Length: 411
Ligand code: C6P
View (spheres, helix red, strand yellow):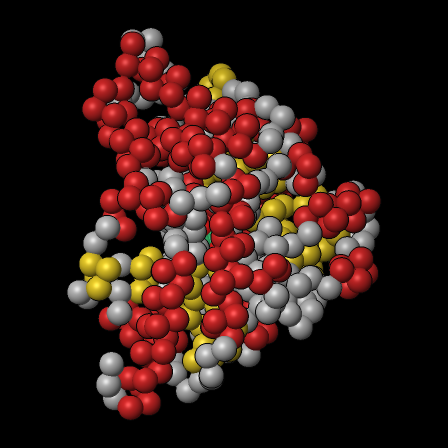
């Protein structure tokens, strides 16, 4: 069991006041905070080992390379990949998904093929497929959602066909708080000889993920949403697919031989990683994985489930508050999008900030989903393992104070 009160002491940023109130950070779906242990590893790297990787023979270059490649191995083990060659470091989920669309998509998708997505996709897992469909005269097909926001699997079975080339889908939604049945979908997708690309940005930080058990062909996520630094992310791909694919970027690090008119590529995973990589970022992500492993992903998941079971009914009990996504706490991740009747979510988020409670408001980079929900924007509270029951209480109190303020003009 997690002692969140103790754990949060390890996050220096959480120990501050905002607008004269103790900070309650509930914007973890946007980015998470970083524990001292991760900050220390990054600082140590720059203090002691900074050098370029894979090139030098001197001691610092060897140390930097060793640390960076050790981080790749940590990622491999964390997501259950078969080998570290299948783990590509990228700038984040967005870059990872763009690489698949640009490389695999441009090579293997043909005119008339279908690319299947859902209305709940983040723009990062949608716009690159729209662009690919345009480049290739392929068709974008949307799966239907149930009332509560789950994928309608009967519809999925009808829409994923022999015409399907790619199914691109979020593992967990950044708005609805649903987890999609990736393994079940992968079976359908593979029956039709297509590939499944999974956007794991909101899943990997919050639950144990095993890419082989899911049978995902590609799986993308970001370091900054799991206690790591910004500017580093991962694209997992099955070796036979990555082997066939052309790199997206060209330059140093990724070549084997450079002739006057043409070049050959080095082996996986470096074939895709042109230029000096985000070395400190990779090492920082490795440290974040060590940190999460020490706590345990099962324990993190269980703690978040407990928080949701505690806070969701309290939110539901607030008059005039609408929650988007499933009402059953067992089926809802720790991302809770909501609106207050007659109030703009930006006003709600600003009022909550005055109470020291940080939430996000807007379209959450999911405009098609918000159109589907028939709203222009929502407020969104998103919890992580360092959030406490008291944080949840502060959210409820702040929402009630917000209602009071807008109704009666006083806090
Ligand atoms: N969602 C949010 O507040 P990047 O920016 O590349 O690290 O991650 C993009 C991304 C992709 N997929 C999903 C499901 C996501 O939630 C995100 C990032 C943040 O919801 C910032 S918009």
